[in-house]
Length: 341
Image (cartoon, rainbow, N blue to C red):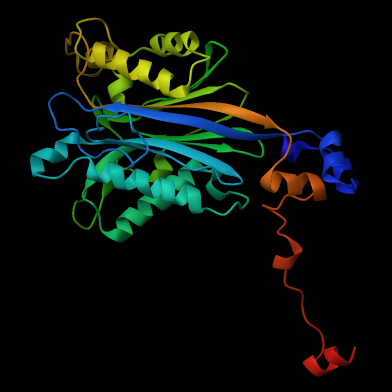
């Protein structure tokens, strides 16, 4: 990895020599999203415009697929709380605004020591922008994942009952846990507080943190509860491993379709077990809900590029050691004295 390199490249006379002495990978994500609204509600606008041409609308769900920067690439999903509809509030507006803000923050962020590679910090900034704007009114769960393109570190922040899985070589390398106050009452960001006060409203810092070093070919799956309440982890593993060489859009299509079929079926689903364990309620079959899934493949490109090239060529990490033209030196003497020298 770029930050674990030997010190020899600092003395290399060329970038080619630096690459030879300390080969690295520049990590990236290839991602696609798919969604379908619940049958009992209109499609809504719950997706970032232009990001999902194959979607029929996401209902109250939303997502973002961030454009890679030199140092980071980020993706995320959110599930707007449908109960707001009873108050004549667009339940999908909040989640859409939150994800749009996340995308903007991720793409604007400087490559500092923390930068946009911290998904909890990214989510907090996106939420703060929503509050400063004064809305829209609503609430939402959120799950944001980031990939550090220098180190290959994947970090995830999950708030509520959406979630993430990382599937590697046919097994689950990472799985997030659901955060709920009680059955079917997930942690959620609420806003704006000046209009609606919820004593159980969550804050971005309450999100669970996860981190793992990426491996070439890892598949990251982010899903709302419309997927996770209807598909077991074994179902997701079967779909992903069975299509491991397929495009990420096709994998997302398969997950969306199977979740939709299960949502209207009478087979055993995770929601059956959750209802029984949570409130002792007997539930049969799936749960009809908005279904949104983001699938991303981790890829390591051999060689160096962008800021990584500068790390190899100079032995300095520009995230912690800015280029010298950004470092102001203390000036000595007067302007006239300096001109005489």
